[in-house]
Length: 623
Image (cartoon, rainbow, N blue to C red; front, side):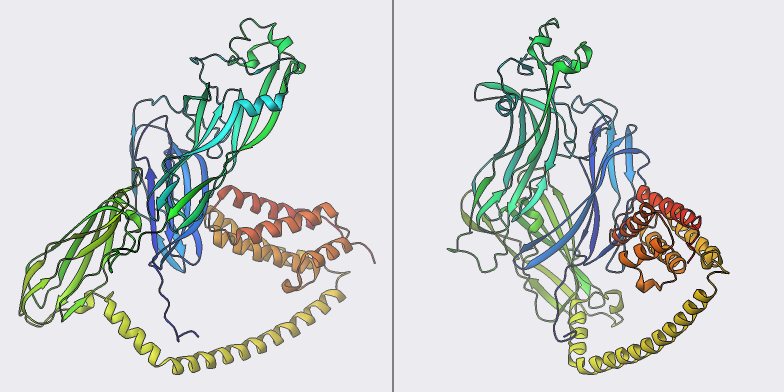
């Protein structure tokens, strides 16, 4: 099973990006770190952000895309940051460990202009995207409303439903697979309230690109059904459908804390009935004059009819590119020897689902040895549709001198505007190869695809020998482990018996306290290094060892039931017992979280240290 099949997996990739790359000093930027094609992300350490205020984050999300059998998994971590000063900032490389491999991201540049945009208020109170904003923060509104005055006989909930609306607008409700749809979730309001996004819409079946950074709180005025509203954009995305059918854009859910002033109290305040945007806190209104309500409102789901790409006239080499594209190709040099490596450069540019476009097939002449290609991209994801270019570099060698021609490379794509398939071509590439000295060093190209295939084939042909060897090692390891565990159990039983006999005259906790202190000191060192994985490993080990010696139990016997029973026998308060179990749960959960949270690590260390000191003060009950 291990060697009888070959699994195609994507290459690990760790990248950083910032959106937008140029802001004013009062605006926010979204910093994103993404690990692609990793089965297990063990840790992710961000770079220093000392020049910024972290408004929210780290926020983690994961997902996958599948285009024509090409599956990509990703884990993304985002921060919303605000610069402390103007200037050009270089955000350093982040570190990650995925599938046992140490990875470094690229650096990113952020230019901060010494100006004020007027859109953002620079508030650092945002704890999450679209969180806790005041829809009526503008001190000089151009339109006056009176809806926040609650008159006699009016139903507050009915009034809220008529004056606060959550809806989603789309630029189209029918499209082809791979054709972008722009969806904008909006909050329309005519009342004084604080609103929080409690349920973000998910976009199953789509590749998603956000068009606005989280935390955007600027607003516009729109007229809807004859009424003028303040309108806030909750989320704006461009969606690329990955499959045909009726795909649903799920609802956004917004919690609104709405404030009303009762009519009899509003009449006491000059002009308040005409301008309810005046801050209620400025008026001497008693608590009984105010009425607050909390309601949760949702947008209505929208169905997008995604049509399959037509089968008529579909080119045989079509690989799912939808949009308008061009392809150009060239050689790094047109004359070289058999000792040298040539390089084919191919650029795909245009607009459409460019991030999902793969390299087209190249018809190489006979006798060429092709190495692993390198792909780079320069894509503007804020354009609709996405635009930019992809560069592919193919190193290759030729063993026989002569004149060669690489035929035109074809890129077939579907133009959704015209509803037709089109094909772009490169020019044929002519070059000549002269005879070399025969000193070509192929070791420089260790990523040769053919070499990899030959190695895997040799591995496959000798799989039974490898399986037998592995089975032998497993059996030997199992026997060794059984012998070791038997000796360990025997020694542990002897230690437990001896400890019970000497319990009245000795304190097993005091005898081990120095070793346990050393374990906590090791955890503290990892805490200072911000190494979350090692910190929680050592903290888990040291705290469980402490409980093992305190309760005269093996570490393997520790569970919620045995811990509670033994602590109760020692006369330890149930509140302390619950704290011990809660700490173990927190440590267990953090062991499987790849993000380093310094605050949580410090709290866990202090809890463990405090519980050990507290447990040491208890005296065992007399039997």
